Each structure stands twice: as C-alpha cells, then as structure tokens.
Image 1 (tube, rainbow, N blue to C red):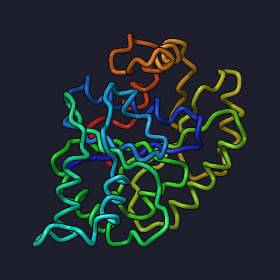
Image 2: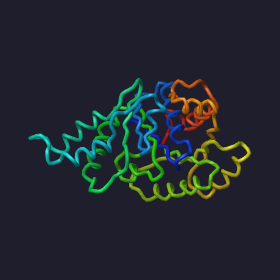
Image 3: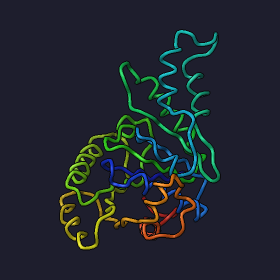
Image 4: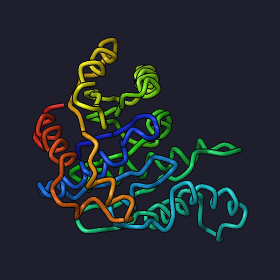
Length: 255
C-alpha cells in the first residue's frame, strides 16, 4: 500500500521547494517508485525535478469538453480520459510526474473529476509513495480527485498572511471527506531568532510543528539558474528535510 504526503501553503512559502526535496530524499533512500503530483496551478514542480511535462490533466479535461461530440465511434468519455491520463504522466528515473494544471473553468467537471479519481485509485497501488504539491485551497483534495492523505505538511513563513492561509487550510481539512492522517506545520525560511514567535502564532492550530527549512542560498542559486534540486549538493535546507522525514519515520511510519 502506498503512503502519501501532501504539501500546502500560501504562494511564496517555499512549498514546491520542500516537495522537490522530499522527492529527492525518498529517491536517495530508494523508497520508490514515487508518483509526484503537481496540483499547484503554477506547475513549477517539474522544473525543480528536472523534467518538463508536455500536458496536464487540466489540458486533457478541456480537450474532452471540446471534442466530446466528435469522439470516434465506439469510444466513450471514460475510454478517452483513461487513454489521455496515461499520456499526461511524465516518466523519470525512480518517479513519475502527474501535472494537474489550472483549476476548473466554466462548465460542469463532475464527471471528469470522478474519472480522474477512479484513475488515481487504480494508479496509486503501483507506487510506494505519492507526493503532492498543492495550492492553498487544496482544490484537488477537497474535490476528491486525489486519494486520502497520510501526512499533510503546511508551510508557513514569518509573514502573517501565511498563518492566515494555514488557518484556512485547517478549516478546509476539517470539512472535506478525505481522510487525512497526521497534520503538520513546517516553518520555511524563518530566521532562527523568529522561530519561537512562529511557534506562538501556531499555538491555536491543530497542526504539530515539524521543523524549519531555512533559507538556502544554494537552493536559490539553483532555481535562478534553472537547475533541478535532485542534483543539488548537500545543503542546509536538504539537511532539514532529512530531519523532517526522519521524524515522520520514513516508509515504515505509522499513520
């Protein structure tokens, strides 16, 4: 049975960087194969992992709405989507990337979402881990286009806006039907002298504080240069990710 980690938070909190470094950790620990899901509309995770997705689930969903009246004889909507979903998975060494793409536009997507969920249910057992980078609204979790989550990590910075987003995520997770096992907050790019202040702000949340991923010049330089984070030399941020994943207990952790 696969285990899953979802990373969420306000834009700019470093959640995509955290997600990429978690994938790197799991690859180095040989805890694959891994399904990586980029559920953030900005879709930058592929760049940080050194691969470029050609198409997203959102693109496929829009194609179906355009072509639904012109499908080949004998091909139903389910068959069209299933064939397309296999094509939007980008394969790499040790992991596959599924990019969800932009959010829903006009029109009813309920049927397409049910097909995506069915596809995910069938796909997940093929992987040891599912790692997801989410947008702040947790759209794909709340719409149940993804499976239940074992670990939810919410990234916050020193900005009060990131705490507001964390509170919103807490409310969303309390209302959705998906099962979320353990919920954590991860401080991101917080200065050491501000850690206690961050913890105080988090006191009212039901999330457990997991650690701080510090600002890292090596990571910033790699991103600016367009380099992936899988080949980044050992650095402060990656060391903190190792500690965080060790706290979770790795592959044998209990949910």
